[in-house]
Length: 135
Figure 1: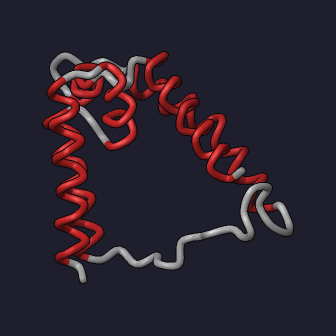
Figure 2 (figure 1 turned 90 degrees about the vertical axis):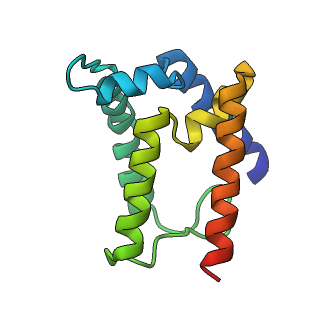
């Protein structure tokens, strides 16, 4: 059941990205372009936060266990260290240059654009290299 819920959540996320055009790299890059600013990404983020924040509040106040898992998995590390700063910087630079972050890139595979496929392959390769380096 947990995998079905994960699949449905992923499909809903992808549909939301497509409906808001946030899987379009030009839309994202337009948000980051200070000379020709496109504020639509900000409004999509505000809408997502308006829905997610009450949900997270409710989940944190809920006693017991999640509906579809044995336990809650909460972050255990709260330190801001050089690895976090480096990773966030690389993520932000890649997002600005390419216009994709992982969720929209995977959702955009449905359009079968060659650039998206190359990006997703490079993203997974980079994750594998990071995993091998950090061992």
